[in-house]
Every structure is written in structure tokens, then in C-alpha cells.
Amino acid sequence: MGYGTALKGGSAAGAGGLPGTRWVLGLACAAQFMVVLDVSVVNVALPSIGSALGFAPTELPWVVNAYGLAFAGLLLLGGRLADVLGHRRAFLLGLALFSAASLAGGLAGAPGALIAARAVQGAGAALLAPATLTVLTGTFPEGPARTRALAVWTAVGVAGGAAGNLIGGALTEYLSWRWILLVNVPIGVGGVLLGTRLLPAGRGEARKPRLDIPGAVLATAGIAVLTYGLAQAESRGWGDAVTVGAAVAGLLLLMGFVGVEARVARAPLVPLGLLRARSVGVGNLILLLTGACLIPMWYFLSLYMQQVLHYSPLRTAVGFLPHTLVTMAVGARLAPQLMRYAGPRTLIVTSAVVSAAGFWWQSRITPDSAYVDGILGPAIVISVGSGLLLTPVTTAVTSGVDPAHAGAASGLMNTTKQVGGALGLAALSTVAASHAPGIQALTAAYARAFQTIAVVLAAVAVVALALPRRGDATS
Image (cartoon, rainbow, N blue to C red):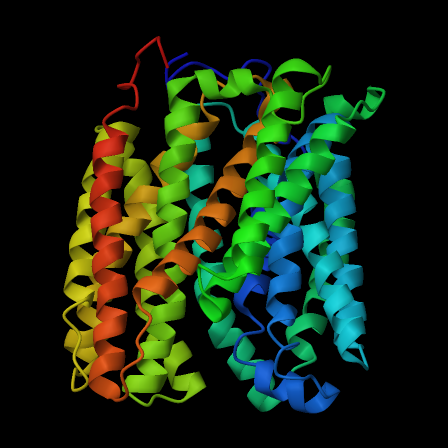
């Protein structure tokens, strides 16, 4: 199917209802913002959390990793549940679980309780994230309306990731670290109440649930174990037995998952036929590579600002505002307009090249760089490129997908992006490893990471040439 093929069964559900599709879009975007926000919102608060609850230094990273592992590991199952339960039930259940876990985490009195709450939060996010996209693809038919909706959804997701440090820093400094989790509770309760009124009953709700349990176990375990192995690479090294063992075990489990999906499962978690469409298969490869570049950017740039330029956490968070504002403006406003003329493939190639140029500029940093030439200038170029990149990629991987597989396609897309981020961070941390002392060596290490990102994004431009042209029936 081509990019312009109408989504089978798609409708403008809610267009004539109360209060309409704009409210549905707002609800889906608010939920997506929460999910992405909580990936990074705890970073600035970690020292306060450690002191308050008595975390050992080796335990503290699990406040972050518990959420990330559960999120990445359960995304495919979450996408499948969105198909089986219907997007309404999946959305409400995911949002309720996420909010309840946020309450438990905000009230936690011991390290184990907080880590467990973060893991349950990740599970709720894994169900909620695919449901937000399925809500949009079920509400807006293919064409300009869906493109605009996906552009806003994408921009809000980017803003959530970028705003995590800023919101976490402000809440921790002026209230308490507990509010970085408790703030989700009233938003989540309001979202559940609105969702029961706004979202129409999905087609999946009348269906007898059929889940691919072996595939779900293999995919969840494989992604979680692989992500765990990658997370250990920075501290233990790539040659460590734990790192290698976990990575190999994760890959074997994922190979088993592919075998089950291809030969055993009657209701596959991810129908492999989805990947036969070039727009879906190539689009997910682009998402993997893009996630490996854009997600780690926040990590390395934050360290550069704090360790080299000696910014405070709050000043560092404010320093990221240009990334957030430019990406949102370009992604929500400019990308949909350009897609009317250029089509996804042309826009992806162009924006990947622009992003690569921005990261190459970013790699020119020195210990004496001023904010304007060391952060702001590269930020504008990077944000223009990434803002133009994410919307057409999202459009490509969701175009022409049968409604019965919309949740699976969404879960696959989100999983690909998250796994790409974990893989990219582990690999780039090795590239940026520096054993020499001093600010010069540290700056050179971060510069290598940005140079590597630039090269990978240039490769994304080449890969994108394999996408079908607009209107190509072979997509």
C-alpha cells in the first residue's frame, strides 16, 4: 500500500461527539507526555532520593533502569493488548496502572518499594504508549488530518523527554523529589475520567482475548535481558562476563521469539507480515538508528554542561529549552506542511542530513565554549533536523497498516525506538570512555560521541532511500 492509501476501517471517531477530535488528541498527547517524561524526570532528583531513602551507590541507577527495562520489555505485549482489548480499555487500564504506581513510588519509604513502583510504572507505560498512538490512528483517517495529529503527538513526546530534567529539577528544588512522581496522580485521574467520556468503545472490546503467551514471554525476557546487558556495558565493560552473557542470552531469546511468531503462534504478538511492507520494515530500522542517536544526546550534553561548563542542574535543564521549543515548533507546524509537497522519504533524507550537520557542529565543543556557539547554535540545527525527521518516520511506519494490527505496529515502533536508545547509549558510552584525567580529555570524549552520532545519522539518510516513494503501491 502507498502512503496515501486510506486506513481500512479508519474513521474520524469522535469528530461529531463531545467534545471532538481535538480533545481526543489532547488526551492522547497528555498521556504520551507523561510516559516519555518519566524516562528522564528522576535524573536530577537521584542524589536527593539516595539521601532520603538510604540507597547504596550501586542501587541508585535502578530507579532509572527499573522503569526503562519494564517499559522496553513489555512494549510489544502492550501493543498487542491494545489490539485485543481495544484502544479504549488499553488506554484506561494503562493510565490507571501508571498513576497508581506513581502514587506508590511517591509515598515509598524504602529503596525496594521505590524500585518496584518504578517497574510497575514502566509496565503501565508499556500499555499506555501504544494505546495513545492507536487512539490517534483510529480517530484520524490517513491524510492531512492524521499527519497533523501525528506531528503534534511526536512533538509532545519529544517535549516530554526534553522537559524531564527541567521539571524534575524544579520540583526537587522547590517542593520535594516525591512530587516528580506524585504530580502524575491528579493528571492520571483526570485522564481516566476524560477517557471514559471521550473515547469510543473499540472494536477489540467485544472480542474474546487471544494472546501469544510464549511470544510475549520470549519478547519481554529477550528485550529486558538484552537491555540489562547493554546497561552494564558502561560500568563493567564490553568484555565482562555479565555484559556478554546477558547480551547473548537476550539475542537468543529474541531469536526464539521470531521463531515462535513465524511458526507457532496462532495470534502473533507481532505479525511478521507487517515487516514485509517496506514502509514498516525500513521505517523501523530508521527508528532504531534514530533512537540510538537522539535519546543518548540528552545524556552526553547534560554531562558536558555540568562537568565541563560547570552549569548547575537547573541551569542545565534551562539550557535544553531551545532543543524543546524548536523541535516542538518545527515538528508540529513545519513538518506537516512540508509533507504535503515532499512526502515522507524526501523529508526523512533531508532532515537526517540536517541533524547530522548539527551534531558535527556540536562535536566542535571545547572546554571554553560559550553557550551561544557551544550549545545554542548546534541545538537549533539539531532540533530543526530532528523535528522534521520524527513526524515522517512515524507516518511511514503507520501508513497502510490494517486496523487489526494497529496496536502491534505501534508497540513495535515504540519498542524499536527504546531499544535503539539503550543500544546507542551503551555503544556511545564506550566510544566516549576516557581514562585520561582533565577537562580536555573529558571534552574530547564527548566530542567523539557527537561525531559518531553525526555519522550514524548520515547513514540514516542513506537507509531512508529504500523507503517507497509517495504513492508507490509496493510499500
